[in-house]
Image (cartoon, rainbow, N blue to C red; front, side, top):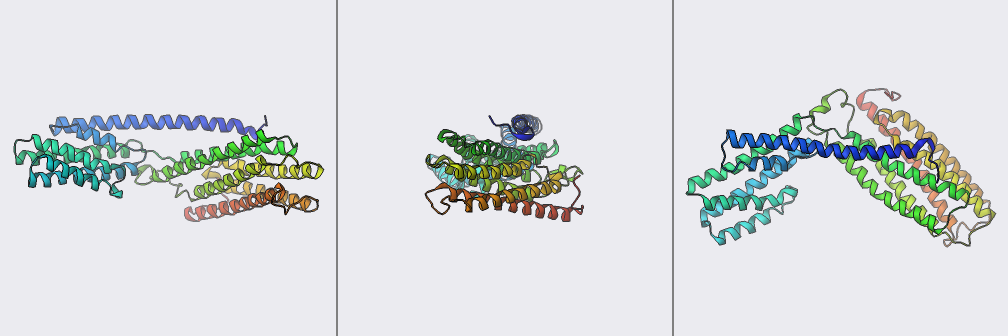
Length: 402
C-alpha cells in the first residue's frame, strides 16, 4: 500500500470522523429545537388559546424546522400560504355548494392543482391536506358562524406554530455552517490526492495491471459524487448566513459569500473529470506497450502526477483565514507541475513513441498532462484573485494570514 505523505490518510480519516459526528450533532440539534418548538406551540394553542384542535400548532412548528434560519423562514411562509389557500378554497366552495361529495371532489381537484405551483415547493401537497382537514371541520360544525371560527382558528394555529418554530431557530444559537463547507472541500481534495498518490508509484515502477487500473477508474468515478456533497455543504453554509444574528458577531463577520470556495469546488470538479479520463486511459493500456522508452514516459508521467498530488493536497487543509498563504503555496506547487509537464513533453518528443497515433495512449496522456497543468495554473490565479477581492472588501492587507 502506498504511504500518503504528511500523514494524509490520518487527516482524511479524522475528517470523515468529524463529518459523521457533525451530521449526528446536527440531527440532535434539530430534534432538540423541534421538541422545544412543539412544546411551546402546544402550550400556546392548548393552554392560552384553548383551541379545539391544538395539534395544528406543534405540527406546523416541527414541519418548518430546518437546518438554517433562512430555510425555516422560507418553509414557514410556504406552509402558511399553502394552508391559507386550502382553507379559503374549501370555505368558498363550502359556502356555495355545501358539504357534499361533489364539493369535496371539487375541493380536491382545485387544491391539488394549486399545490403544483412551483413557488410552494415541497409544501405544495399541504394545500390539499389543509383543505381536507378544513372540509372535515366544516362538515362537523353546527352552523356557518362556528364553521368560519374553526376555519379561522386553523390558520391562526398554523401561524402560531410557524412563528414559534422560526423564533426557536432564530434565537436558540442558529447554526453557521461554514465549517461544513470547508469539510466538504477537505474530503474531496483529500480523496483526489490519495488516488494520485496511489497511481504515481505504480506508474514509476510500471507495476500496474488491468485490475489495478480498474480500481483506479472506479475510485475516480466514486470521487465524482463528493463534488455534489461539497456543493451542497457550501450551499448550506451560504444559506446559514441569511437572517442569522450570529453573523454580526466579530468571529463570524469575516465570512462573506464564500466565492473562493465556489471557485475551489469548480476547480476540483474539473480535476475529478480529468482524473476519470486519465484512469480510463490507464485501464485501457495495451499490453503490447513496453520497452525502455515506454517505461521512461511512464516515469516522467508519474513525476507529473506526484507534483500534482502535492498541488491538490493543500486543498484538503484549506482554511479561509489562511487563504493568502495557501495561495502562495499552491502557486509554488503549480510551478513544479509546469516544470514536470515541460520535462515530460520534451523527453516524449525526443523519443520514437507514436505521440500522434490516436490508437496509442501516449498522445492522450500528454493531452491530460496539459489539462492538469492548465488547471493548476488557473486554480492558482483564481485563488490569488479571490484573496485580493476578499481583502479589498474587508480592508485587510493581502499578506495578512491571521
